[in-house]
Amino acid sequence: DQQVKQNSPSLSVQEGRISILNCDYTNSMFDYFLWYKKYPAEGPTFLISISSIKDKNEDGRFTVFLNKSAKHLSLHIVPSQPGDSAVYFCAATTTNFGNEKLTFGTGTRLTIIP
Amino acid sequence: EPEVTQTPSHQVTQMGQEVILRCVPISNHLYFYWYRQILGQKVEFLVSFYNNEISEKSEIFDDQFSVERPDGSNFTLKIRSTKLEDSAMYFCASTAATAYGYTFGSGTRLTVV
Image (cartoon, rainbow over all chains, first blue to last red):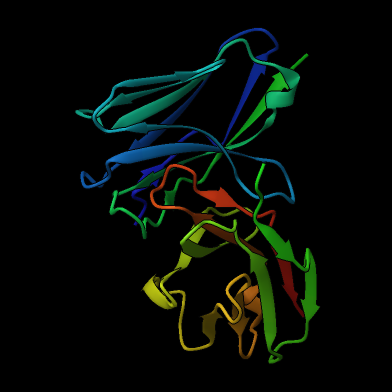
């Protein structure tokens, strides 16, 4: 039961260009979405999040867009840098004022080409 | 910046043996979690823990698994009789109140041979 899907297992982008990572979800109860970055042998590192009451959230080079009607979100990284090369996971939860388990997608491996 | 600390970083154990994975969550956090990632697969929820009891567990978290917060700072995951399919990265996470600020540890790689 894949409630959160990342359909692109990998993506290669030239340094300085925009990286766009996509994520789809099926559970309409999800109301909070997060993006994590993960290097090999490390834990997921929080990048940016968005509540379902918003359609955009920006933090420096990272912007997350949420389209609730399409149950789709995307992460934009501009400009892309070599250090951005990692696996990116989309995650979703239903806010419960605590006890919020995260449902993860399968990840997209982003490679930034110098 | 506060961190979630996990030990050991790598544990090798024989099938059928008990293992205990240890975590020190961020000190003012109240909600604690274990997740795992089998190689090449997605990160999966195992269990959440609040107020000294399990809040929710997944179907993966069967009777072979248990969690404990023995001393107010450590948070442990015990697997009583390990199976080959328990081989995975196990991540501990904690949060103060909501999904914002959910912080993961760097993981323990468990290898069952």
